[in-house]
Image (tube, rainbow over all chains, first blue to last red; front, side):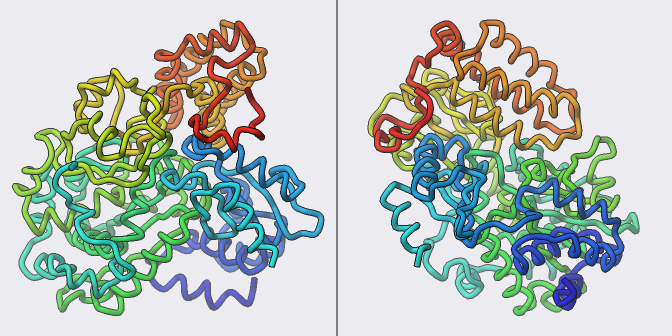
Length: 155
Length: 441
C-alpha cells in the first residue's frame, strides 16, 4: 500500500484536524481497488500510517460486506435477492447465473474469471432485478439480457 | 397528476445534472442571496416555519433538529447528508444524487451557513457507483466555480464538503451508526441521550438530514416558508418522492404532493398492478412499515398523518406493490433473512432475535413448522420492541407483526399442509419463465 500514500495524503486535505480515523474506510476501499482485496501487510501499513490500532481496521474489514480479505474472480457478479428483486424474478436470475457459470453463490469459477454472490437491496428496486458486476449496475435483467451480459464479459 | 413538483421540476437530459444547466435553472442564486443578505438564524427560522418533516423515514421536523445547534457555543459543528439509502424498496435519494446533485450541494451550503458549519459530509452507500460519481463530480464543479471552499461568493463563509462512501451496512443508514462509520469504525449505533445535535461526529454538535430533506432547503429559502406550506397538507407540508416497485405496471420515482389519493396514485399514476392482476397489499414506506391491504389504502391519502392513522407509516417513501397470488410466508422469509443479515450484533435482542425469526420462517418454508411458531414470531417481535439501541429490531418486528396480522391463514396453511397457499410465489404470474428454477413451490 505504500505507493498509495500520496493519494491518502490528498484525501486528508478537506478533512478537519484530528479526523485521521475517518480515512480508514476510504483508504481500505482504495487498497482493495488496487490489489483486489486487503492483505495482512495492508492492515499493518495502514494502521501505522493513520495511527489507529490494528484491531480497529480488522473490525472494519469484518463488519462491512464490501471489504474482502481474499481475492475474487475477474468479474464479481452480485445479484440482489431482496424483496423487490425477488418479486421481479431474482431467484430465477441467480439460478440462471449459477447454471451458466457452473457455480453456486459464494463460489468462484476454477479459471478465476467469475465469482457469484447474492446481496441484499442495492437500491435499484424500480429496475429490478439487478446484478452488480464489479462496480456497475445491470438493471431490468431477463434471461436474454443475462446471456448478453455473460457474452460481453467473456470477450 | 400528483400535484406540485418541488424537486423533479425540470426535464432530465444528458447534461441536466451539470453545473451549467443548474445555473441556467437559477442554481446557486439562492445561496448567493443568503450569503449577502440573511443571518444564519433567519435561514433556520424559515425552514422551521416551513415545517418540513425529515424524509429519511422518521418524519422529524428538520427545523427543530437544526434549532438545537447553538451558534455561539465556540465548538465546531458538522453537517452530514444521509445518502446511505438502504431501506429495501427505497431508491428516491438516488434520483436526486444522479439528476440534481447541485441542488443538494446548494442546499447543503445554505444549511451549513445556517448552522455555522465549516465541514460537511455526504455519506453515500458504497454500492452506489453512478450516484457517487455524479455527486463527487458536482462537488468538484462547485469548488472550481467558487460555490464551495474558502470565502464563498466573496463572503466570509467557507465550507468544505467531503463525499464519503460506505462499504455495505444497512445499519449505517441510522444516524448514529452513520457517524460511527464516519469515524472509521464499524457502524454501531449509539444510545441517546446525548442527542447527536449535542454530541455527534467526534463528540461535536452534528446535524444529519436525509438527501431529500436537504434538497428542499434551497426552494424553501428561495420562495419562503409560506409558499412551501401552500403545498401538501397542514401537518405534512411539501412533497414526497415515492419510489415504487414490485408488482406495479410503471415502477420508478414519483414526486407526490402530500395529501394525494393513495389508491389513485397506484391505479392511475403508476398504471396499477402488473399485468392487470388484483392488488393484494402494499408496503407503504420501506419494508419496515406495516403492509396495508387493498381495502386499507382505499380511504387513505399520501401523507404521514393519514398512513399513520391506518397503523402504518409513509416512512422513507419506499412503496412495494404486491399482486394477488403472492405468498406472504415467503415474503416474510425474504424480510427476516435481510434483517438477520444486517443486524450489527451490538444488542442481544436484535442479534439473537433476528436469527431466531429467520430460522423459524425457514423451518415453516421447509415444511417443518409448528403452529406455535406463529406466536413465537410475534413474541420475539414484541421482545425486540424498544429494547435495542437503534430502531432496526423494532422495525423487523413491525414488519413481521403486520404481515402475520393480515395473512395469518397463509402461515397456518403452510404449517398444517406443508405447502404454500400460493405455490411459494414471489414473482407475479407473468414471470413464468423465471419460475422453472425457483427452489420452492
